[in-house]
Image 1 (cartoon, one colour):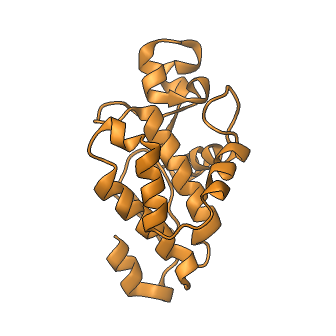
Image 2: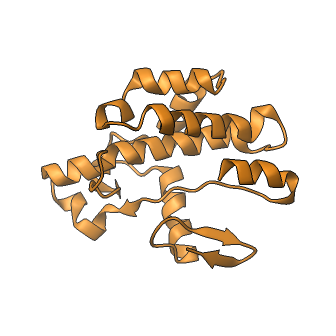
Amino acid sequence: VAPIVHALGSKIQFVPHVMIHVGTITNCPNDNGDACHQSCTNNGRYCYPSFSTFSGANVVKENLRRLCIWKHYGQDTTTREGGEIWWDYVTYFNDHCSSTNESFASEKCIKEAYKHSHLSKAEEIEDCMKDSGGVDEDTPNALLDNELALQKDYGIYSTPYIWIEHNSFM
């Protein structure tokens, strides 16, 4: 996707969104079992199915990190400080931190992805994650709630999903 977005340049507006689901679908806010802890954050509020190599809770946390990187570095995609940093982070992370659940959640690998993408203010990203509501406490997270609302508003229930000029494609 990155080469296509770069090739189209200012002719398109790219805004990344993440796929998560609300924990009430799987009764996770009321269930303290291992499945919910592996799949969800915020005491079962935000979940990602744990059917892959990675725990769903780690996917939700990484999704939140990417939303914060976009929020701080991706708004102006016409500059290096814009979309390039987000793309470089995501590409490096996918290539180097996605082989195992341990590497996916590795702070060392995340820091290497920050460094590789020239993300100069990693503390801003960590603060953004905490300030939006974090992932550890039984509290709402504003950024993740926004993603859930957008999924509902646009009728998005699976990925990949592309929305172009008010038309959707799966």
